[in-house]
Image (cartoon, rainbow, N blue to C red):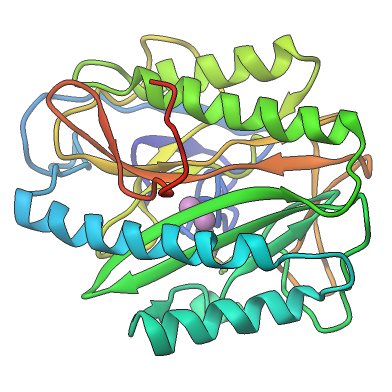
Length: 309
Ligand code: MF3
Ligand code: CO
Ligand code: CO
């Protein structure tokens, strides 16, 4: 049972970002007619039925630091290689080979609940969990999310970026930028005593303030030796509600923001690819972070990434 928030009602097989909001914790969060029932939380530093999120020890956090660095390094490596005409299958192969042969690590998505590739590549109206394919050629004007999760020494690092391919329309650039701002505004609020509702609220406010919508069915997630664990990190909500953060908690924030309406469609064909119902663009950025005594540590920060907080 996922905790953080228990969704009463429909136990769909959600993945957190593979967790759909709910049921069997895959990764993203679950839909529609479900109601969210906040659990009661205490400030003790262990996992209990009332507080399912156990802070990590300093040596465990070292594991997260290394895994996060490697995941970020895959994106640093692949980003400059993504060009018009390349296929998402090639991107997957380059990342897979780098993770396995150079990093001596494991691509977490490969065979995860049956996922067939080593990374996710989500182009244009694909929200998340796009399956890399040798028949999917990138064209000028496309926007692509590349989502990498590596396992090193048993620990997970999970991160994604958006890239524009060739000549990208201003409206698409703006969607990518505002989505990254949503991530940064949420991370800027992370500190002991803040709540997950604070993060969701600021993301929702910034997205909707720019006339975009927030995907509800998929969410961020706790992460550690388990790819997707409690809590579910919703990208919408109300300030002051939800899990209260404590030093040592580790989770992802990975807002999926749509240019049009928020509604999603899961491919019946492959069981993975999530697209916007209205066919309009979607963007996503993701980091894996840890709560510190005074703020947050971004385990997946890229070397050229200046954090605005
Ligand atoms: N990286 C995704 C996340 O952010 C999960 C991908 S798992 C896969 O949680 F099976 F879809 F690859
Ligand atoms: Co994730
Ligand atoms: Co991810």
